[in-house]
Amino acid sequence: GAGVSQTPSNKVTEKGKYVELRCDPISGHTALYWYRQSLGQGPEFLIYFQGTGAADDSGLPNDRFFAVRPEGSVSTLKIQRTERGDSAVYLCASSFSGSTYNEQFFGPGTRLTVL
Amino acid sequence: AQSVTQPDIHITVSEGASLELRCNYSYGATPYLFWYVQSPGQGLQLLLKYFSGDTLVQGIKGFEAEFKRSQSSFNLRKPSVHWSDAAEYFCAVVSAAGNNRKLIWGLGTSLAVNP
Image 1 (tube, rainbow over the protein chains, first blue to last red):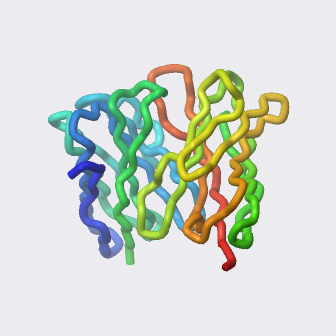
Image 2 (image 1 turned 45 degrees about the vertical axis):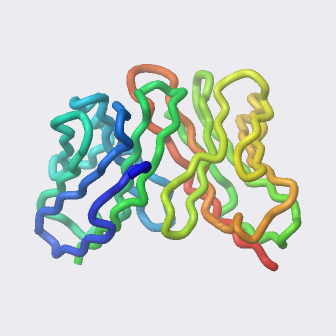
């Protein structure tokens, strides 16, 4: 597809379970970002990849959150032992490079609900 | 620390009326500023951006924004609002320093348009 895609679009899980959220960036984009958006809030930065490596993971809230991008394309955000407070929309964005001048293109998000 | 303030949580205007959405930022160096729009069920879309140069920038969908360093503001304007402009609008700033281009977001302004 032409845009950033995220799967699943919705995920409902129980407290304590493990979840994986997937992001497919625009082909050729080397930079990939994960953000989290809680209800009534603006997006909050989680992690930034340049290629395969995490260039900045300072936004990950704790060690239950982890993300990978093994081949420099698709990325997976992994959340262990989910808590009700993890409920939010998880947004992925990609850009041609990590340059400030390159627009970040956003996917539609994955809505995570932890019961 | 960098921050973005959008003072208006919700605004309602009549179709055809002019619009101004306020954004104030706190940032020590030259800010790179963005306005994004988020429609229900849609991903975030870039409306316009300011990096340097002319302080009045034009964007898509008839929007413009003016950077005022003395007021630390980057207000979004549109001369005549259309019903399809009803959406959530976010102002964001990105760090120009270091390796990361993460976006710092305001809480957003929800725009409703009356027919």
